[in-house]
Picture 1 (cartoon, rainbow, N blue to C red):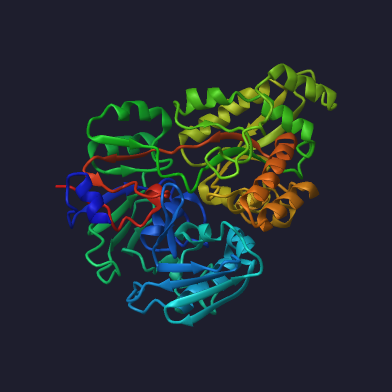
Picture 2: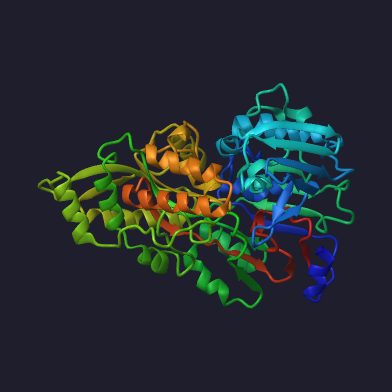
Length: 511
């Protein structure tokens, strides 16, 4: 398939070369599961793989699983694994690694995986190349959990019996992917080299992948313009630089490849902090924000305004469930009615706010939000931090408000539910860290999770969206569409629904 892709572009795949990219911000580790932040999910799939990957229309495609069957009742899944797959340390990859990864590693480390994998009644290795999974009940979107970013397969022999977070393999990752970890100079670069025993014959085409750590946004832009790096992704390039980069004839600006993730940004609210426990306050704050301004003036037209908790690109989105429109006058009236008068300085109350430390655009967003909140008498005190500290503080509930964006993973049960169900209130980043609790919402998400047919799931999801847009547990801002910008001589960059978070075994640099 990769040769055909290359020939379709008029160029046969060329072997060799180094692809220099960027990684922003620098992640704390590159072990999926131990860390689930965006930079880790972008870089680590070059080293780690899942059983499956997904097309732009989210159809499952073979990866470590070469084929699979699903029983008529939707409960039994049998995966036939690729043979002759090796770990980067030379050990053979087997079904035992898959069972360990699903039932132990991700069950302990990943709240999102745990929420789904608890549906598993049996997960067993029938033989070294066959895994059989039996669910307690049918679960329609189950296959969507087997991409590397959701459930990377890890080496049992390197993690079993150890603390998964501190095992030596966390610092020197060992996967089955096309590139093996070689070197990480903190603050400078991450280097991965071709794995010569990779299971796909003749691949990867590249010799080396290097991720440059470039903290300054203008330096990142210059590195791309000058050819020092050939590819940028996600938050590497600030949105206000994109119009100029579109004009450069050697660069491709591509916003495809986020179909699986469908990232949605919001103001993360800690409901334990008064008055954020009051839905009227949350609704008023939401109404004070001009989302069109955010898209047009901050993101320069890339992305679209959010209308609720489910992105319009995610299955079961309901266009009839929408948040209240931008209206400062009504927002002020709502806060008056809620019993929060202005003081002599015009301030009703003050909230601490942590901008998302993923680049200048997120700082600009928080500065805009500070101005927007000022119009309704809410003072935001901004406090900066780094990416690791941000994740720790949000996970420990040590914040009042911040900015977050979360991936939806193709289905609300996989990527939306986790933020709002009370059973997922945990001291772990990307769970229900806000502490929102509504029994109706819990029941509807459970109904959608357990429904056997799509129509029943749609009814439950539509109802839950109507409730959430009234409760406003988080203040949804934008549906993000991150650009992948790359030199046109780099081929096969965006071929799946995972954009630059794929393995890159088919990527090559044309001569």
